[in-house]
Length: 224
Image (cartoon, rainbow, N blue to C red):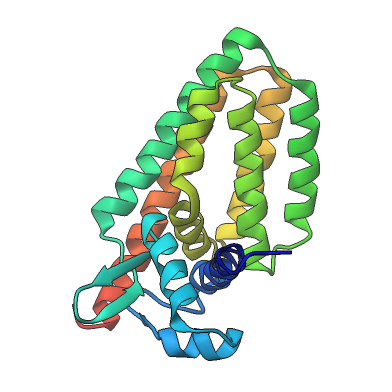
């Protein structure tokens, strides 16, 4: 039998997952306030598990807690997004360097091909595509056989998924992404590692450019 404390922890995690999905999918927009009472009523609970859920999301970088005002969906500055994607770029470059040393993991390569096929099947579902894209790149990181690189990559977590979701929502970006992922598979299969590094760098630079353009447009629309 669950203790009340354990039950509260489970509920807090459930609420945190729900809010995370709302943020990553864009249902909750940057700067939007999280109303504790709404979630408490939805889950038939007190505000305590909701506060704990918001605390979890603040640690994960999705929510910002403002004194005397409550919690809002975190707004990311362009510099923060740039740093996030640059770190991803650096980790993937390190992964490619390790793959040069250890060789191609054929099992992971086959997994990447399967994920790519699934990505092609959900080109009209931005959220699903974003999740599969993340899984695709995690396979590349796993292929480095470096627990340190993997740990650092996983720390990018939900903020990275949120940024990618925003990028893929722009018309034409998913189709472009599909072509680039096909190229990544081709270069891995042929073990053209120098070319792979170049493609990954360009791939990440294009995401940075796309996100920057989207944020500039949003700021213009908001009068910032």
